[in-house]
Image (cartoon, rainbow, N blue to C red; front, side):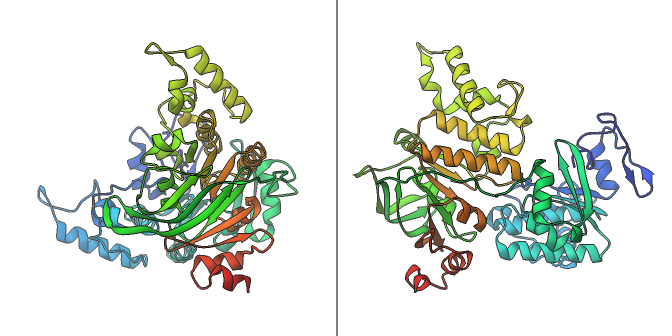
Length: 467
């Protein structure tokens, strides 16, 4: 995709690109050339500027002018026409930081379409969207198709292909392994092509045996640190056992991420409630406190919050653990390297060297680096916020196996997932969040997608679901 939209210019690759009946050669100013040709991309990681408005972001670098001055009236009127044309319900004057993730994603699409795109490339566009927002995006893409816009749609949520695509192409290890009409392929066949082998099961078998309760949260309330009047957690209660995977489900905005980042000391200001670890009440003021208590967090956005992309795999793994290698104001680099190599090997991180930039790794291997650095800190509780977001089926399976192995070794795992199949396939119990509250905990014997959704939408309580 980076070749197609000009990030890698002509000459940095071999082969040819045919576009509108002619060979496409994008030169040194290739990104701008691609835009002029009508090729636009919406990246998985949003590239919007939070403090600017929707209109300012969409027309950034191409603002309509009246002489040397930006014509703001024209900018916002053109923005409004663009949003209406593609049926995007967004206020052009709204600031990006005040929008939900779904509206941000729609703004990214509008920004791409503002160049009169003929070819729109979407990289994992639904990875952070709610079910309702996904349906809205599908409607928009169907409308674009009717307007003559061609879309290249990248996703690891395989069911989406059957809702939106005409043709599916499967890539593996940088090569095309199949191109077929969507109606002629099944999910099972697609998975087999992606991983290069038969996969008889989506989730690996586990021999974990959860032990005694050793961590509990009672009636937890927390306020948004940027707006103390806004309560983000409104009464959350649950307990966690040694060797258990407790899944956390809920819709976007239910408070899932706010809960785990508050437990890690990096978001909400706790106003009420109690947190107990091994029978003793604890207070967590920041991440340093959490780490000292044996709590680690693999964040939802690994690139922005979990990794230092310009640093090596070695440096990323050792970063929160440098005190273990420090003596007399120096780092014992031999010990640091030995530990990093140990975790790189035990988690099967695919790299030629731990000195390679972490930016060069695939999404699945980057996630293993984030997990490695926290395993090195010897945690008691490992929190995983959407651990398989944006990674392929084969890498997902490896993460699942690793989670099972850690739980079998006695680690307690809190796992948030936006995919109900993943929650049902990997959890021992499921905590369902709704509007900042815990709306019930389901045992696996009683858990179904329907019951989870009934709790997540607030239609029913846990007692009503069981009845």
